[in-house]
Amino acid sequence: YLQLARMEFAPPALLSDEEVAEVLLKADELKRWAEEIYTYAQNEAVVNRKEWPGFKLVLGRSNRKYTSEEDFNLLIEKIKSIDFAFLAGSEWLTNIERIDLLTRLIKHGVHLNVIISEPHQAENIACHMRHSDRFYVSFQKNIEIWLKFQQKHSDFVHVKVSLLPLMHNYYAFNRKDASTNSIRVNFYTYDNSYIEKNLTEILDSKSPHYQLFKQEFRYLWSVSQNITDFTCNKMEQIN
Image 1: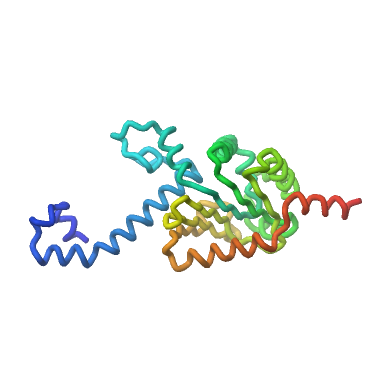
Image 2: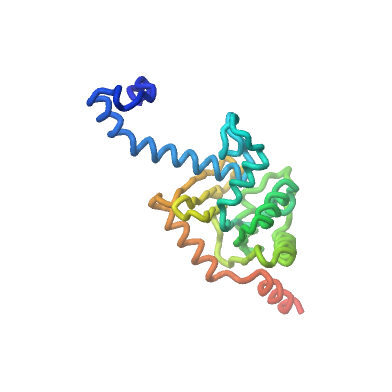
């Protein structure tokens, strides 16, 4: 790769046959690596509103005339729907910046498909990963706030409750160009209360593990209960 760098992106006609052969040997691998970085940067821009030096929310270089707001709108317009799966996801509805992000996605016509964990199931897992000094929203309260959010945006937000254990955070970006779809998976780790320290994988649609996680989400979606039905069933059990 250092040999490629020394070529300084010279025009092909100025390269020797040996140098052209060297580029061809490495081109596919470099392209794949660049696509993985681009996918990661886009996902971080959407999920965490991260900005990259010299770029405006990934889409535009700093010398383009778009504002960050315009760039972000262009990024959203490429997305058809987002699939979420996590134990609770309460930070999405208690953090004002994340609430604003979800609202903007909805206003742009993006459908949000959310799977959260049944409270007792979630508690059995989360109790091993809590920080002693942090305040947490209860899992029962989490059900209530997601139900209200779905009721407020019923045309675009669909929430289900899983009775099966969820062992990672999952975000799938389903874009209008399906070939650019990607998944972000953050694995829970027992005895670790810092989610940013967990193993994270970014998978594009060409990754061998992409379909595996996609299939898992479809299965969980098919066996999970609509949050409205889940809440009604719980109320009936109490009464």
